[in-house]
Amino acid sequence: MADTALTARPRSPLAHAAGWLADATRSSRGAVRLAELPFLTQLDVRLDAKGPAADAVGLALGLQLPLEPNTVVRAGDLTALWLGPDEWLLVGPPGSERDLESSVREAAGDEPVSVTDVSAQRTTLLVAGERARDLLAHGCSLDLHPRAFAPGRCAQTTLGRTQVVLVSRDEPRAGFWVLVRSSFAGYLTDWLLDAATEYV
Image (cartoon, rainbow, N blue to C red):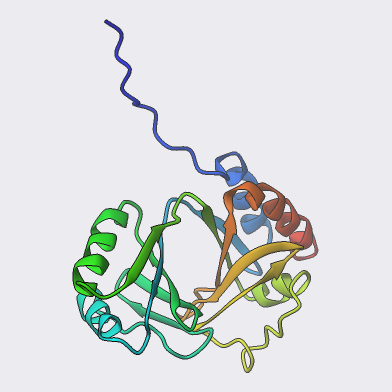
């Protein structure tokens, strides 16, 4: 009898572009660093921000869900992005979606909560380097100056006509995460590589 078990490893939406991203990074000599961060766990969580579930979930996760619009809270390898008054995106290491979802649901108890695994829906691009803000500004209408979009901020916006979630990372020189739908990841990568040509 044939073995029908799936043994193939998952393939990231940008596996074909890894070499191009690395070449652009090398050529820019530190001006721009581009890479895919594939398979990050991404859970969309909705609950009452003023209800008891919000505090319980925060305690269970070891971080307080951000309540200020367009802000990010990070603890260890878990990041929470504010997407709306009752909506957050939890971003964690690859493969942690089941444990993370279980933690949220158990902490919420009988309180109304929605937890949706959207990990396969998006991939994440890292855009870093001393000209990262300039590169992103080519195709984003947000004011990306550090005074307006400081580390620890996030926004749902468009980049190169593509819907993204843009995150200004809070570690020194960490740059930006660009969370993009997998079906648009190739297009956006081509756009970024083209826009980066003036720095390479």
